[in-house]
Amino acid sequence: MRIAFVLSGLGAGGAEKIVNLLAHHRKAQGDIVHVLAVNAASPESYFPYNSAIKIEALGNTTHTIPRVAHTAQRLFRLHRQLRAIKPDLIISFLTKINVLVGIAAYGLDSPIIMSERNNFTSQQKHVFWRLALPVAIRSAASLVMQTPEAYQSLPRRFRSKAEIIPNPVTLPPDCERVLSDGTRVIAVGRMERQKGFDLLLEAFSFVTHSVPAAQLTIFGDGSQRGALEQFARDLGIAENVKMPGITRFPLEWVGAGDIFVLSSRFEGFPNVLLEAMTAGLASIAFDCSWGPAEILSSPDAGLLIPPGDVRKMGEAILSVMTDATLRKKLSKTGAAAATAKYATSSILQQWDGVIARSVKPPSLRPTYSENAASPRAESHA
Image (cartoon, rainbow, N blue to C red; front, side, top):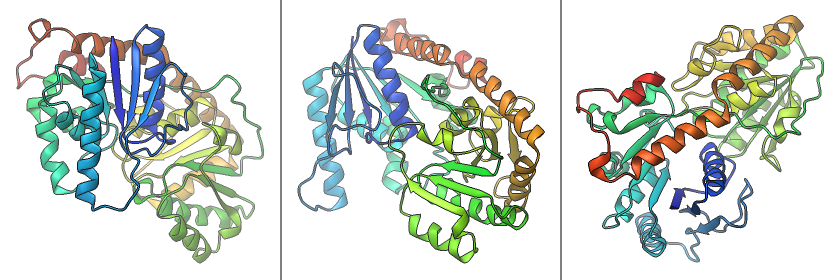
């Protein structure tokens, strides 16, 4: 089977990671695999690909053009490339890309699996994308959501197409941590409002009053870097905070801390929280929608803090930092819970199932009442 994965870019994000994992898995199954990066200017990828997987960057633009023309250009290139590939299956990731694929694949006899990776109820979207998404979803054979909350947020008429498949735990075999005195806190993500690093800085300033030697390292980059650096100076904690940018290779950040904090205002499914837990980092997270409450549902797997409660977040960080027994318990229990619930083999098997069901002739696909929940989705909830 020939599969075309379509995503936005080839950077260090969660969608890029799962596409890389799925692409290699399906190649190992004997499929011919193409990866189309709609907004990438070159085929260079943060997550390395086997040379047999065809990577195509569709975003190279040599001159400045209006945004509408920019989108039209990407759409044309995507349509042209899909027609050239003639895939037996298209799998797309993220809201805007799902919309573009729904339009670009019009007229092709290729079933589409659309996967939503972010919280589409909290994302700020232009009216075009908001109105176009339901239209695009109609062309999908299947939808993959990452949490029961995401499934429940779908319009009822689309739930019969939905599958709930969370992200798997993936750590390289040589991923090691150096234990320290527990004063190292790390966070990872795009430096955008969604990730709530401003809230984390405010909470961490509370910690430094009691533990002046505490260190916070935020890995990532984005449009708010300058504002975050200034905020750290305003809080008087600039000497305690590092922002080294994006790591040179995946999961390099794991060895830099003792405590991991997810400070997001909203999420789709926080991969970094799973990775931190699996690596043995005592983990703390705001109970934002979606994902943290599900990931930390096991007792003592991590600490959940009311959304946006800076004071309680600071108190939780301080508690874990100064209590070695608590830190060890969260580390051990969190790692066991994450690896048991989100094993890679199980998640890939679920993806194989939805792929097999999606490529069946329409007459052989299961049908459900528009008012009924998908049995597969209910089994995950």
